[in-house]
Image (tube, rainbow, N blue to C red; front, side, top):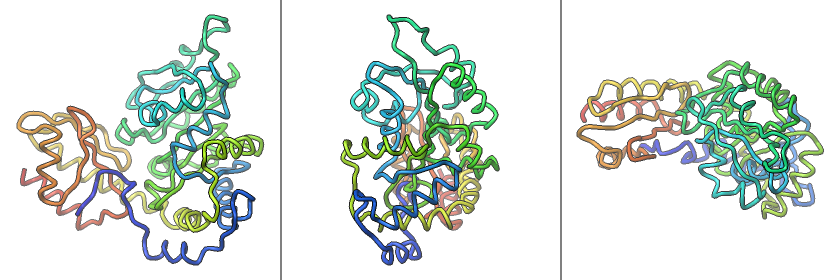
Amino acid sequence: MIDYRSDTVTKPSKAMQEAMFSAPVGDDVFGEDPSINELEKNAAAIFGMEAALFCPSGTMTNQIAIKCHTQPGDEVICDVTSHIYQYEGGGIAANSGAQVKLIHGDRGRITAEQVRESINADDVHKARTTLVSLENTSNRGGGSCYDLAEIKKIRAVCDEHNLALHLDGARLFNALVAKGESPEDYGKTFHSISICLSKSLGCPVGSLVMGSKDFIRKARRVRKAFGGGMRQAGYLAAAGIYALKNNVERLTEDHQHAKLLAEALSKKDFVETVLPVETNIVIFSVGGRFTPQSLVAKLKEQNVYWYSISPTQVRIVTHLDVTPDMIEKTINAINDL
């Protein structure tokens, strides 16, 4: 089975398992799990931020951040394809009582000028704009990456209007590697950052939200209310410690694999368009003799698993469990279609 449905399908390597099995643990709700404490300290240091909080999922870290930054009745600005809007179960409304101002960006990326135009006036008839959320890389944008210069312009608009700036960085390390950018620059630019350990970094479970000490103190209380307080979860945190040390630089291999698959697909008559490939996600439009569903079913016959994400599009995600041999077999399968 060659599984490209998501980078969440990875299994812990033997070395990661050994790190997990040997992890010292304690009760994290009491702040006494040494492995979680180490992971949180390490992650915060990578981004030059004051503190971090370990959570079960990226949805939880995003929702915690939104709740910390807003009050009921506030408004959150984000791209229309954002994960926080499309794929988190209406959590902005359910958890924070906030509403959303949607921007139609470029492959999931919005600009400072669009943000400026979307901020509500100080008017009792309008929701109070309090938060801007970006996603880097953008999942529905085909793994597209922001330019840091544009992010800094957005931060300047936020500062001008006293808005918080949050980053859904589920695949942020892909962007950092692809663009050659510094995590410390991101830590200086955002009020809060969420990163996933269970996507490109290959961990079985877990995400982190980072920010100031005061922000994380508030986030810890919100995590408890959300039911996210775990006990001896250091076994999971140990996987994150291992991944941050060993699984970041190798992301270039996933990006190269994605580009090879995109190149093969671009030559097929049933592929109408392929979004530009910057990282580990390939999204392409299907037409002619296949539908996305029939194409996915056809590849499944050869134990190659893709994912139909819309009536017209298929998504492929490369990851650390996809080997060069698997890429070659997949390209051969594409060529035979």
